[in-house]
Length: 191
View 1 (cartoon, one colour):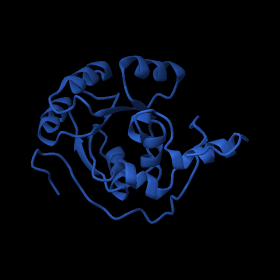
View 2: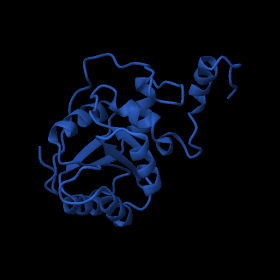
View 3: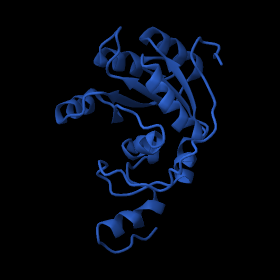
View 4: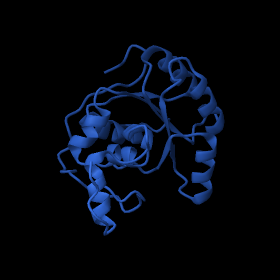
C-alpha cells in the first residue's frame, strides 16, 4: 500500500515466532523487555525509516508493526525531509550508508527539519566498531543499531539501545530494575 507522500507504508500481523522476554548479550544494560513492554513504548508512534535498503526496511517493518508502530520508508534524503514535514514522526531511524548523502549531512538535515525538532534519532550502521559508535555519539544520535536487522528482535533492540525511548532519565523503567538487580547479584530494587 502506498502512503500519500510516495513512501511505502504497510501493516502486517505479529511475527509467528515467540519473541517474549529476551536478553541481548550485546546490550550492556542487563535487563530485558517483554513484548507487552515493547508495545507499550512504541504503540501509536510514527517511525520514519530513511534507508535505501528495502529488505532491511521489511525486517524493521515486521518488528515495528508487531509493536503497533507505523513505519514509513524514505529511500532518499529529500523524500525523508518531505515526509518529516507531513507526518511529524516521533522516531527517525536513518541509515549511515545512503547513496545520496553522508551520514553527518543527513543527520544535520533531519535534526533541523520542520516536524523533527524533538524526534528520537537513531542511526543504523553496517560498520560495528568502537570508532563508529564514538562517531555516532559525537554526531548527536540518541541511539544506534547495527545491520543486519533481526525482524523478531529489532523493536526490543531499538528500545534497549535508545534510552530516550524508555523514559526521560535514560534508565530502564521501574518494572525492569528488579531484573537488572537480580542479574547483577544485587538486592531487589524497590519501585
